[in-house]
Every structure is written in C-alpha cells, then in structure tokens.
Length: 361
Image 1 (cartoon, rainbow, N blue to C red):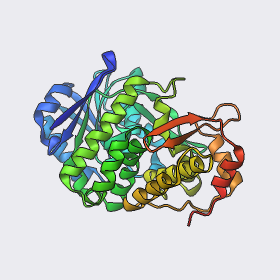
Image 2 (image 1 turned 90 degrees about the vertical axis):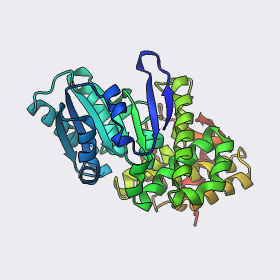
Image 3 (image 1 turned 90 degrees about the horizontal axis):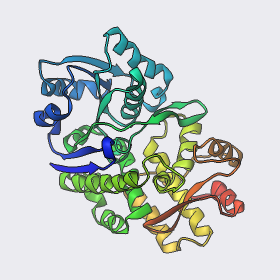
C-alpha cells in the first residue's frame, strides 16, 4: 500500500492506494469510528462490494445502505434527496459517517450530502472507477448537476480519507477504464511532461489493466492533483487549480447537449482536450508535433477523437454557462507545450470559432 497526504491544515487527509484495501480493517478502524455509518453506493456497485465493506466495518456498526440508481443522469437534486430521506428516516445525527462507495457520481453526490446534512458531517471516499480514483475523489469538489449546467450546485468539502483499491478496477468495463484514462492524460498535459512520456510507453499496459502500471498511474495522478489542491484549494484568482479543467469547458458542453451519460465524462473531456490542443496550435502556442502526440495518446487510450455534431451557436451557449465564464468572457485552459497550461480569455475569438466548427475526422 502507498499513502499520499493532502496537506490542508486541519482539513488534511491521506489517500491510500493499493490492493485489497476494501478488506483492510486497520484503515477503517482508524477513520470510521462512528457508530452509525451510511454507505452511499449505486445499483451496479452494491451487489459487488457492499457486503464486503459492511463486513470490514464490523458487526458493532449500525449500517444504513443507501443504493442510488446508476448514471450521470441521476446526479441531481431528486437523487440527493433520497440520501437525506434515508438519513432522516434512520434518525441519523451529526455523528453519522457517510461513505461514498462508487464512481464519480456517487462520490460527488455523497460528498455534497455530507457537506450539507446537519450543516456538515464526516465522509470517506472509496472510488470504484479509475476516473474517480485519479480525479473526482481527491480535492474536495462535491456537487450535483442542473439541467442548465454540470456541477453548478455544490460545495468544497474534504473527505476524511480516500481509499483507492486497485482491485476494484477488475470489474470495470473497458469503456469506463478508457474514460478514466482521459483524466490521467490530463495531468501529463497540464504539468507533468515526464508523466506524459511515461504514458506513451505504458498506455497499452494500462488499457490491459496491468496492476503495477495502474498503481503507478493512480499514484502519479493523485500526487499531481494533491500538489495543485494544496496550492489552490478553493480555485482562487491564482488560477492554479483551474488548470485541472483542461478540456472541461468543451467537454461539459458536449455532455450537456448529448445527454448526461450518453457521452461519459472522460470521453467528453478527451474531445475537449483535443479541441483545446487544436486551438492552442492555431494560436501558435503549441507546436504541431505536440498536437499530434496528444491525439495519438488519446486514441491509444481507446477514447474518441472526433467531436459530436453540435452547432457553433449551441456550443457557445453551453460554454457560456460554464463556471469559469465571467461576464461575457469564456475562460479556457489552453496549452503552450505538453506539460504547460494556463487559464486565459486572451485569444482570438475567430480561432475559437474555427475550433468549434473544425472537422476533426
């Protein structure tokens, strides 16, 4: 097992990465001391892992299983209320512990429930997908979607720990694995050229679920995210944390327009990163060979490289709803090289227009 630490003063917490951690009683004895524990999961994950976690927590705990429907389309206020309903029916108090057992949707919605129930209760993240292990479970962003925008309602709220059990990826469908690899690639693109180079060498092993390669990828991704979060926890005007949104302004527009869940988050982000790279190239900031390397690695990860057919007007309307947009200026994370990114609104709007209408096929 490898342990990383997110250093945020009194909100600091460890990330555990390794094999068979769901059965590690020592971890949960250390972090799950509450007598009442609500396990928030979904109807795909529950049959696989809910009983294992319940047994690990021990017979002396009152366990409240909360099983949500699976999918991004359920990351909304109605589903959030299902969590509140079960907590209140079971007379849970401020000493309840919530555990998110699932992917990014479960983690985000459980975290927001923990941030808001009784004005804040403890929670633990147990991410079951690659995407959630390397990204959404780390850093304290929680929330739900609105019909007019993704992740528009939420809170910054840090977990007590993150337990990334690589064994849980064994049951992950290949499409979901590839979606997670988009966020892994992102860290190489925004700040870690050495990691990007490593991914070019090991991508085939990653897509084949090679255990040692997955542990390395998760650890290096979480290390990168930890450093960014420690430098800019609340995504301040320093714009350090904002670089984690490479491809996301384009990607969120795709998810919204195509219907949440029809395009997986990682798939939409992959297209968004290609669009950001293309735009950076057209602005003269990114060299053509680097642009081609980006496309090649994304394709090698089993991800789409051609955007869906969305009109320029619709794309712009959806991007205007992005959280990073201020006034009438769409802020974008763009690149000057592989391993270097910045948030900016200082670009030629004609280049943005060209990007939104470019035929990538």
